[in-house]
Length: 256
Image (cartoon, rainbow, N blue to C red; front, top):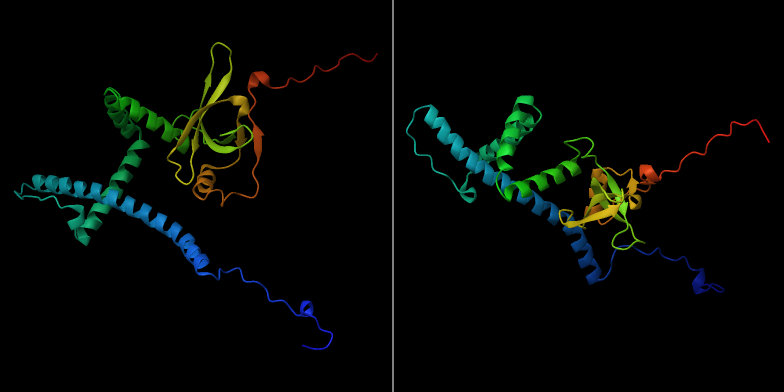
């Protein structure tokens, strides 16, 4: 050490943000693998569901083909786990084709009539009509399809679970108390990181805070625990029309 040079005069080494302990590196590895694992599990679930449906479609499509061709062939149903790669490609392809045809029918006038007929039959089955109708209205409300007035994508904030806190919610419907005229909003409050579970709340309309968040942004925030929140959002209070401040009457007199 040179004369007159103290320890504080030495150039300090910049600290590394990388974990140096075994525990820290293990935690870093866990945090790195969690998004990949969740994505892999989700893809595997979708793939398995599509394969199970596709195997069933391949079986019945094969029976229909040989019936039309008037060939007496005993078609065997293959289990999804024992299917070869060609069978898997055909099964996944038929599943995607089925989804495409259903989507085309849903946007076609003639196809819409067939779907309405099928839904009318389903709605006549006890208990099934309640479950189907509720899920259908919820999906329409969250996806923005159906009645434009009832299925707008509205991401709002409500005081939940405490009045001083704010939680992201999806506004699905509005109701009115016939006695008092008070307007309420039915909202769905999803949980993190699984937005498919949550709470249904009935909130006075004046306690709703509307946002300019899109459905994709809100779902991304919920899945990431708020890590993907945009830096800025625009909030506006929802005030009932009956409670909106009225403009003061203009003074038409010339003067005092």
